[in-house]
Length: 238
Image (cartoon, rainbow, N blue to C red; front, side, top):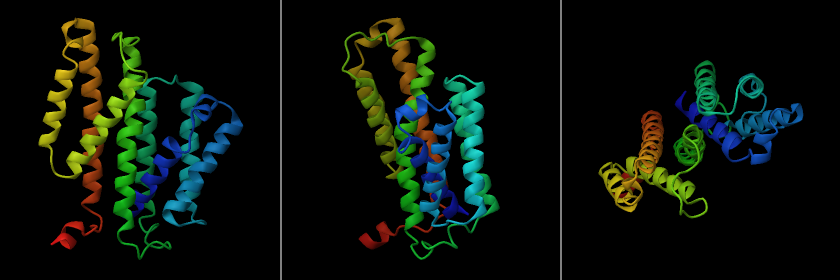
């Protein structure tokens, strides 16, 4: 089951955050756009599992597009609907993995014991950085425009991307103490902004949300990783 879950998780991340451009998100209310997204979901799941004819893969695509249709047509694209949408998608992955636990093991990649770990870490890195950016961005929209006046174009975007990526690497590399260094470094660099109440609250909320997302996703990835065949990097080094 963990191997199947890792493969399906990568498929989901690729379909939603790599092969879903901005125009597709903006035009998702159109039937043809939803169909195209469903096709991408189906194809990515086929590629990552190596299964082409499995009913579970088609069920996954159908459920995915049903969730997206309901969200697009009945809810606004704000923080809570976005989080609920992702939670339902992840629950669907777990359900499919539970119903068809041998989906990966019976596919053509079964002999590649290192592949599930690689898929999991790749998907985790993308989900921590890219998905985290969307989630935190939608959360911060509730508090109005960025109150920090002079800032680089997309500076906050890149800061968030890098800090979440570093947290992912630090936790995976069993160096959680480095997260404290990140907090201290960001506090020093944002010291001037923290002199004003509104700016300080903006920075604190955004930072805590970004760090919280990265830590939660990374811990979930590590939990699944513990149940997969290990890559054997450490043993090879010795």
